[in-house]
Every structure is written in C-alpha cells, then in structure tokens.
Length: 335
Length: 226
Image 1 (cartoon, chains in turn blue, yellow):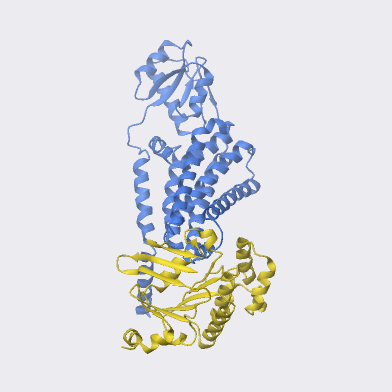
Image 2 (image 1 turned 90 degrees about the vertical axis):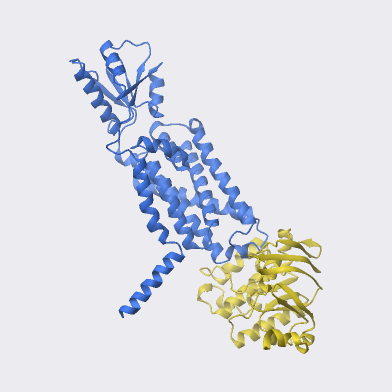
C-alpha cells in the first residue's frame, strides 16, 4: 500500500513538473520576495513629503523657515491657486496643501500620508516653540468609506480574473481539443474568432462588475465615464488574456501562465497607495492605469477626457496584444 | 482538379513532408499509406489548412490553398480524433457549423438522417460511443457538401463493425462523385476500396499507382512484411 502511494505521489509530482504547475511553487515566493523588496521597509529612510503652499499668500515666517529647513521631512512646492493645489493632490504630486488660514488639505483623512504629515508639522511646530497651532483644520478631498474605497480593488480583481485566468484557459482549451482547428475549416475569419473571444471577455468582466454593484450595495453612481473606462479596461485585459492563451498548448499551461501574470498586475496596482517605490513601478502596468482611472471616476468625479493617457495606454495594450494574437493564429501557433 | 507542387513541411529537420508533387483527378478515391511519421497526416493537415507548408503550392480547381475562405468550401476534413464540442448536443455541433457555413437547417436534418443520428440529436457528444462520435465528426465535415473529402486515419481505434461502416461510407461518397483522400497505416484493409494508392515513406512518395500493382510489387514486402 505504501509503495503504491509513493508511486502515485511520484507520478503526481511528475505531472506537476510536466504541466508546469511546479513553476507556481517557485514563482509565488519569488514574487513575494521581490514585492517586499520594492515595498518601503520600515528601516528605510523616509521620503520627504511634498507639501504645497500658495504663492503670494502670507504665511507666518516661522512656518516658512521651519518648513524650508526641514528638507528631510517636507519638500515645499509653491502653487498659484488652491484649485491647482487640489489637482496636484489628486494627481499625487502633492501630499498636502497648507493654507495661511492653517487649514491643511489632504486626499484622505485616514491615510498613512496624512498621519505622517500632521506628525511632521506638529514636530516642527514643537521645535520652533511656536505655541500657535499650524494646523487648525484638516479638509479631505475624498471622503473615507471603507466599502466604497475597496470597490476599485474588487473591480480590478474581477477584470484581471477574467483577463488572466478565464480567457487564457478558454483559448487554450479550444486549441488543446482541436476545436479551433475545426473552426478554421469553416469560412470563419481569424479576426472574427479573435473579436468574439475579446467581446466574450468584455461581457464577462462587465457582467461581473454589474452583479457586484447589484449585490454589493456600493453607493456609487454609474455614469458614462465609468462605463467607458470599464469597457476600455476589459478590452485591454481580455485581449491580453487571449494572447496568453495563444502562447500555451494546453489548459494547464494557460492556468499557470495566467496566475503568473495575474498577481504582478493585481498587487502592485492595489498596493501602490501604500508604497512610494511601488508608485514608481506600478504605472508601467496597464492594471495600474485601470485602477487609478476607476478611483478618479468614482471618487473625484473625473471625466474620461481627463484620463486620456490611461485610456490610450490601455487601448494600446489591447490593440498590440490583439495584433500579436492575430499573428500567432495566422501562424497556427502550437495548434 | 488537385495539383500539388513541391509541397514541403519539415519538423525539426528530420520528419515531415519533403518536396512532394502529384495530381488528383475528380472522383478518385486515394488511399495514402505509410508507417507512423511517414508524412501522411502532415499532407492532409496542410491540405485542410490546419498546418502551413514551408514551401510549395496546392491548387484545387484553380484556387490556391492560401485562399482559405474559398478553399474551406472545396474541402471537408475528417480528423483522426473527433474534435467536437463534446459538452454540447449533436444538434448544437451541427448547428454551429451550419451557421458558420450559412447552411439551411434542412441540411442538418438531412445529415442527421443520413448518418442514423435521429435518436442522438439531443444527446451530449461526450455521452456517445467512439463510433457515434466519428459519425458526427464525418457528418459535420460534409455539412457544406464539399467536392473533396480528406479522412485522416478514419478507422483508427474503431472495431471491425465500425471500420466496415466507415468503408461503406467512403464507397458511398465515392459513388456520389466526391474526390476522396484518406490515410491509413494498414494497406491490407483498403485492397478492394481505393482506386489509387500512394505510399509515403520518410516524407517522400515511394509508390503511386493501382493498389493491385502495389501488392504485387516488392515494396509491400519491404515496408510491411519484413
């Protein structure tokens, strides 16, 4: 009995090596290792925060002098108007804006950056032995609602799940079972098959978001900008997923490749809020642009026109991966 | 009708199909025989547009193989393993391909009747026997009524009764004027079936003629009996 169990375990491990499942055993720890390297560690020298001041406004000389002499805690950046400052905060080029009325404008009240900023200002005030409080009120540009705040992450997870797990597996299944080969013996054009796959991915992703809204009771309005950005994102990741499926001979490989792409696209985007280092790396990923765009639309009521770069980036990734899939299909790649 | 010129497909340098040229006239029933790896399936897969050739040309009624959308109406391909949507019914499989070919529903009924599949119309393909699956596979491949039908090892893995049934079908197709090319690695089976026999050996045509001539020659002894 033990001999048989050992033989079967050996066989299972051989299958895991053969269908490349074993790669995940190495990939996930390696991914976590590299992500932790990128995420700011507690021992790391803290980055100076970007604090905005309004040009030509009268600030207390003590405040100005203290801020300028504390270049390890704050980078002082002057803006012309309050509106400009608010925009910079939304675009994350400023961490906060201090007005001469001692009002501090930040993005969210309950964020690590806000706590660090208030701590920094308070310690400077103590050092300057200034008894008058430098910050009398804090105004957040985005209200904090844990349920609503988590919505972009759920949406990102679902769109990436469709793109990187469902689509590659479906494409690889049609290749593995030679169903695509039989379809190619009909007057169906290659481009029609590819478009049908991408539309299927977009329908699945959009339907899952719709269901999320219906049962999740998220208090957000659905408008045209929101729908357009979801369609752009689902196009991008469905097309990306079809390409991954095309690179695989069978479903097992497609599932593994899907996970290998899923995690790096999900985590840096969702974690970029907490790490300055990831904030630098994440914009290379289309998932980051999708995630940020959803946040801007949901929380800042941004319009799609103001998210031009993100939209063009996602659509470009979609078009490039579509073209690559078309090329592989024409070449009958691994079919 | 079919004109093949210097058709070549090489896999990793050694196997495949080396420059091959031949012509097929309308209404021929050609058996392509050879050992595993001789290039039989490669030849049919190229003709059915499943694999792309490295070089050479194929013309069917003057249409080049690269014109796939026109070519698929000329050729029906029956693969060795039925590649069907096995989680759907027999009828669904026919309907899907009929839609893609823009074929009327009546043709599906005709095929279902012709292949004795009436009782299995709504049965999932995965629940059918191997022989029935092969019947559905053949039926689907001839939905568009193509003048040329390619069969890749149509009797592989089938029992004696089913093999007889497939050969009967080949005869019927041939009698209705279709041009048929089929592969097998058991030449004795098709002695009285094919009108022409081609032997492929290591990617090259080593015999092309009447089946009787082949069996009288020393080649059959060399390739199969020694």
